[in-house]
Image (cartoon, rainbow, N blue to C red; front, side, top):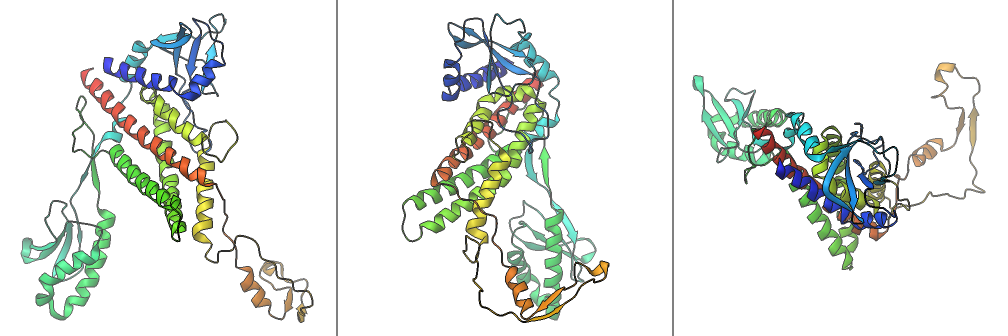
Length: 430
């Protein structure tokens, strides 16, 4: 329990050392005894976050002219919109304070088990599907198998055992070497049946998620759900950084590196926001997890704020972030004809031969009926189908600072996992 409380204090101290907090506190003219309350959500939530903010907020007391973590407490002051709020010690509406130790004990008691799904260990599971062929009866996925092979099964039949689910071509080549001398002219039909079965195997395959036992420590080799998220985020960040670095060198191929960075940014914006939604929602529901990671939550929000796409100091919008990244990607990838503006052709003096004008068509056919028939009407219709994708442009500074967003997101994942392992250890001792 003491480890958990120290984790919370370190996280709060991390917030206090940020330039954003220092600048805010310097403007407050605080006095000893005043209360400083940290918000419990820093990112603009609508319309992405569906859960409600937790009613509990971390609270510090000003001592010696500075907020102190020695007597951290939890308060319920009602909804707070700003990142930080100062309550004068002379105020008649000071919120009641609950000592941190007492609040943590209460939270641990009601933490539940489901939240530990996030640090559940992922394990490959065996899977088998039927294969519609007289020679082979099934295809099995065995992650422990050394290689793809054919094995005998009960009843004198045979089955294919594969050890991967990503390359059906490679799996078939391994099978073909074994069976081609035994099936003769049926090899083609077997290949078709195998391809169908392999696709079904991919659909049916599962990973087991094994929740940690209360009190258990993380094993160095365990692949948890959050660690998988973090490994993927780290890989994408490195690809992004490399692409930006190569782009900054200039040269003939520089634009291709920027497109690589845009592609990674698009994937990150789409997937990371889903995971961030999860983390914020879990923090809403499990306050103690937020208290342990409040520094990282705040720094993610600051990284979004520091992007040069807004002049406002209001909470950053995840939805707007995704829209911008998507718009820039449209510009780079979806406009095959490379036209960034609407095109107008001056047709003054061009004669268009009118053929027929029809009025009062049947009501049911009003949308499909051609009212005005003229020469080359079909040509106009074909040309009018050419459109531009929605697009956006951002300065290079946006892409540079977006790397910080990726880094902060990665750190939040790591901090959340570490906090959950501490909580799991505490839960085992209660």
